[in-house]
Image 1: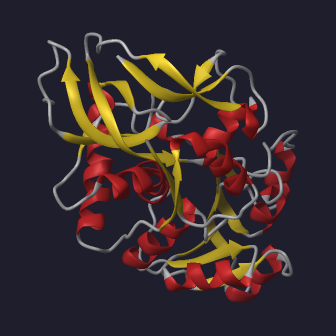
Image 2 (image 1 turned 60 degrees about the vertical axis):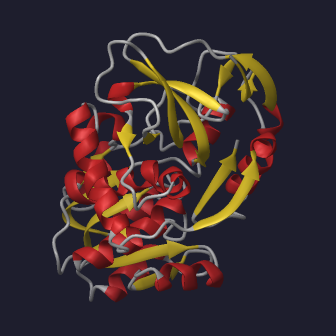
Length: 325
């Protein structure tokens, strides 16, 4: 069937996102066809568009959406037509009216979680789940540092940390973003535009620093993150909003206190249907109980995907933004 979809002919700026009419085939074995009701916009989408993470071109774009199952391959038994579902780990092509997705990568939505909420929170929420519960299992009473606390992932992290009884130190770039993060449960705010991150972490912790730093910013914050860690602390680098970290001298880790560094991905931590569904169940339980609330701050028409990307990269947005197909 014919659908509208955002396509990229070659990597580049936001203007390279164009709305096209394409043919969506029937689902292949193992797949379901999902009619989208809401589409998530995530920072990783800008990496795919720019070429930082390379895709075969021409290509669709987008990894996250929620909607209703319209068609099911004959060998799929766990899903049926009419099920409300969401996905966030591909295939690339979520910026569209519909998409064919492997049934093993789809999660069912509980009745108390809307499609808008799912598209706004699934990828970001699963990211926080694997960061806080698997990469470094936070325990009540601990203190940690989280960069970009007012972003889409950051605001979920604020709420999850508060739920766990963890003291979160969050970095932001403005007073408005500081107020937003604080309102969601971030205990201490560092405005990196006017404050030294590592020095403030030392002040807040009485010189002890923190056992773990979660850093989705990348190049601009890497050294400050290492300098904020206690000896034998863990640096969790999970994103590159300011550009990738390159040229790392492993000797620096020794000099700064026998530090550890990891570069985790959701693809690894939710690699199987079992691990994906277990993480999604934990997330949806917190959403359903009102412990975590998605901060949906803007809706864009599918045709306005380029504007959404520009706003996201220029840090105009906070929380989660959605495309409406």
